[in-house]
Image (cartoon, rainbow, N blue to C red; front, side):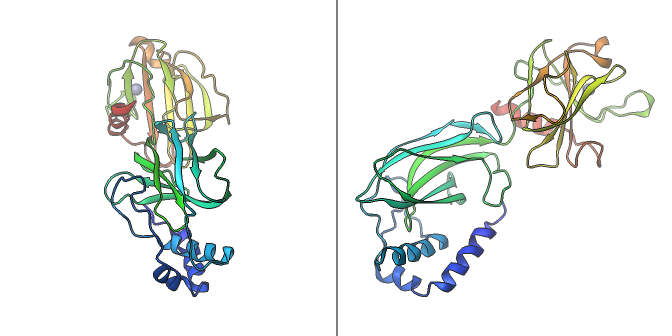
Length: 310
Ligand SMILES: [Zn+2]
């Protein structure tokens, strides 16, 4: 994982200009909420929160940042299982009780030991009498997709570690065959004319829906009678990787340049092209540096990982 360089730099500047930060922190007895709702162990304040506390103290004219009686009300994260660039955006809804309007910090943290923050927002001047929402696009602070894993939201006043507000499993891909399937011819098998098999075959019942393993933009689609039959090529979002789906039953419903989200239909399993002499199957190719740039990679290890949760 890449460090949150941008944020740290920003707050280092803030700290350098906020001379009183250390005093505010040490002298005012800031209560760090630690595990919030009784979960987990107290965690030290983050560098960024220390700066926030100083900012808040100056803004309110108080030397002592306070949670103003903050208590998280109802909170919920939807969906509980999400996909990077999926059709359903990741949303936190929450309410809170406090004596006045507050600036709140929302964090997405890795679940488990350590619980590193992967994304953070400062929400200003929130009313305790309302329901609030925060969307997460599944990206780290630096814009890269968050790794496949388990995450939790935490919500709390500036200078506090926050209260657990909901959790989710985030997957960075989805298995492309939405139904029963087998693993057919593997990557790298010799083919006629000195070619090699550049993808993994996934036999499945004719007409089984196919979905985008990773959202992105349709780079091209077409028909090749000799080899691939109906095919579609998707340029993966936030990745150099391209995804090539072949032997589709019919032309993809997607148009050139169309935006497709992870899990959205790209077609159906068929036996067009040179699969016509065999059976219905998806032929999937993955091109880590883009289609026909460099070499394709063996999709099998990734497919088996996606298959576990799809
Ligand atoms: Zn194949």
